[in-house]
Image (cartoon, rainbow, N blue to C red; front, side, top):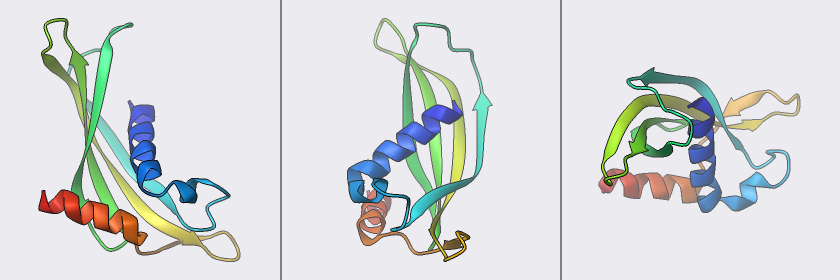
Length: 118
């Protein structure tokens, strides 16, 4: 479930700022500082799982995403298996490699604002 969180989040950011995924993070990077998953039901091998991500909270340097894990049923309905949250901070690294919180890149911030405005 945690791997799915990371994959969904990374795909989202890659679609917005693919150039930030080349290199070694010199343009900045997103660091996960806390994550959790609350399990409601078990997934079984060969289930089709849909993972959704929504913006829950946005601050100057950080964001909290809400995730839902849904099993696609044969009749087209979906059953919630779990939900979770992930807190992330956008950072740049100083000359020693220490992460320093930094404002989100403009394209990301614009996408977040559009998501908030609906």
